[in-house]
Length: 116
Length: 116
DNA sequence: TTGTCGCATGCCGATATAGGCATATGATGG
DNA sequence: CCATCATATGCCTATATCGGCATGCGACAA
Image (cartoon, rainbow over all chains, first blue to last red; front, side, top):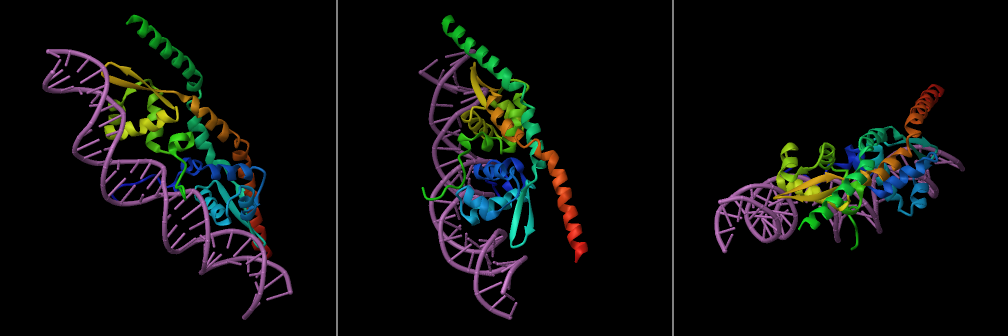
């Protein structure tokens, strides 16, 4: 291995939720457990496609499976999202402050130009 | 275009923060503006490497640049993280509930085994 | 104008996906 | 044991990175 293209999505929740379809799956699962085919149809993707995304979600622990007769019901296990929420939350005070800083920045530009 | 490998990191904040190094950069910028070289050194990456990550962050709007003499100071613009925080926050009630569900799930397994 | 400093880009190699398809697996009901 | 339904995998193609290196470029000071 000489060069890595990207951290394996398989071991990183941030990467797992970087995929829109996977976020959609998680969102759907908020309503309760669902079989693969159901999810696939609802999200307009093929069954294999859904299975693959579900696998990624399972490997990072955001989803868990349970056999129910012939089907396999996928359920949400949101605990893994907590660290993400906390990391992003660490920036909370900045996205209010950012406005001000940007304003200050713009003011600075104007000022600078007038000084020319 | 017949098959896409992945959504362009360039237009998606979720993808932008899926990169550990980029998260580190954002974290460092919480302390204030910094020139590229500074960030690169502090994070143990090459200058070109830092520039590239900063470019991605700039393109999704998480970072902004300001010329300061010979240097270019990069500053945080966390506003783009708000949507992420909100999306993840939508699962907040689930990561408490998840415990219970998992418990129920485990109980179910035990029960099932004993029934054999 | 010229030499430097600080950054941004271009190019290359190795890889990790995302999807589509066909097919292997598993569990169930007869 | 067999046919069938529900899923999981394998394989292949087109891409999108990530990192390393060398190099282009713009701003500044002498």
